[in-house]
Image: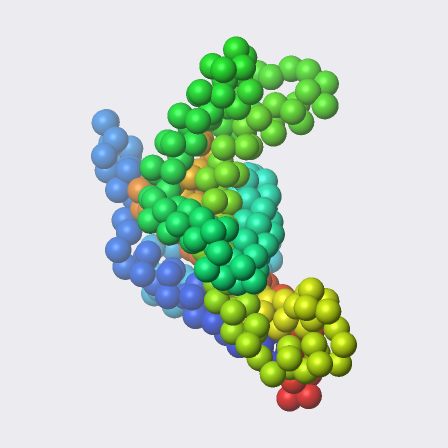
Amino acid sequence: MAGFLLRRLANYVALCFIAAFATFSLASLTFNPLASYYERTPPPPAEVILAKRAELRLDDPIPLRFLGWLGDVLRGDFGTTVTGTDIGAELFARVGVSLRLLLLGTVIGIAIGVVVGVAGAIRQYKVSDYVSTVFSFVLLSTPVFVLAQLLKFGGLELNAAAGTTILFFQGEVTPSFQGSAFAELVDRLQHLVLPTLAIALGQIALYSRYQRSAMLDVLGSDFLRTARAKGLTRRRALFTHGLRTALIPMATLFAFGFGLLLTGAVLTERIFGWFGMGDWFVYGVQRQDTNIVAIVTLFAAVLILVSGWLSDVLYAALDPRIRIR
């Protein structure tokens, strides 16, 4: 098992390096980081532009620039943006925002998605199965920005019915909020509910469909019939042997789904005013800032590396055949 995990880790590190180099090269070839300087009125002195050009190493070959940038990153120096903002401080602030937004939504999406999928498989072609199927297809076919607006309308109706503000629609916390730690926690939760639902509902729909199919494959298997023949009740056979087997293919989906979601929840972050990694990536593209795009891509690649490796650990734990390879 250790050899399998080490081989997988080496593969992920190589893929991470390739993804970072490809993104850095593409951004360097297409971006002009000094474009904002030329658009200023009056334009800055030529010496300022030349100094910035030297600071960003724009005259060096791309492979040399990439190796220099990667070496700085490995030493903990993330550099600065075109406008001079420290990328390291901005990176950690943005990561915190994204994790606070996405972790809860992902956990809720996975937990409810698995429960709905398993229930749909066990009660196949029952009313509850049809209802969950219809809701899943409706959610999967609804664009995120439409779903977010519907949630906002629902929040408005709830606030109007309650006669007070229960749910907020913008930001992570009320500006200039003052109060006790508990009051601040409540305020943050009031801001968190709607974007968390926007993240979780789509994942519930997606994971429930995959989990239902995986569970249906298991329900007709020989090992489950053998477990029943040895005296296990249907419920115990299903949850002791069936669910464990059905979760094996889902482990990889869960892990990579979260890794991709961190930078993929751009619309949700922008609609609800959460300035996380996805929003920062779009900002970097708009400002043609290679350093921002490269560091966000590298962070996403490392996160996917960690997620993929953890899924391999879980996969090996669930499937004994992996341990003897």
